[in-house]
Length: 289
Image (cartoon, rainbow, N blue to C red; front, side, top):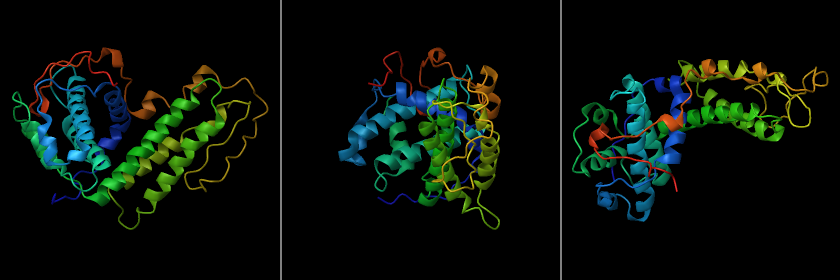
């Protein structure tokens, strides 16, 4: 199937809000798998019969994610182009995971939009969905996973007596992904280089020596430029204070650093999906089995 992919049109600006989008992605994975009443999934057979179940689940999650982003503003609006850009990336990345060659993302979206009797045109979102070229999608995936690993690290380090090995695994992944992308930032650079630089600022702001690992050890934050396989150095004062950081220190990577806000998942009530032309009732049955 010829998909006519396009170069990535935007400037990776949705990554400025990536911590917020990661939270909604996780919420979607948890709650967005239930079937949608009235949605005819038969169109999936025109794309990949063997991946029907996976693509069906993807449809449910995409509808859930669109509605969750729209409703987070307590209304029926999106956040400028950032939401549409993220939704296009999300759809491209998830379809690519299931069927990396055979399913055209734009065409799949158009069929999804046409598969339900209550669908109406959503011209803005429709114009933002297109097939991202493979090389651009690969870079975006690495950049997305880099931020997700960093988020996981910050959650682990805030635990009482965090495990050193577990935290260092996430830091190693961050270093590997950062260096892989940094190699491409030469000459006039790529569009994602500014986002990568912003990530480095957030990373370097972490004072890992404030945190006491399980076993009363403290380690320095490995440099993003260092060998990812090299063991982290011991903090000079690691033996002085064995009681661990104060609650203020343990706050570490604050909401200000994330550039986002906490999402009370219990407060998100998914009502009627009105975006991308899908109208249907959603209730508490949206729980990942």
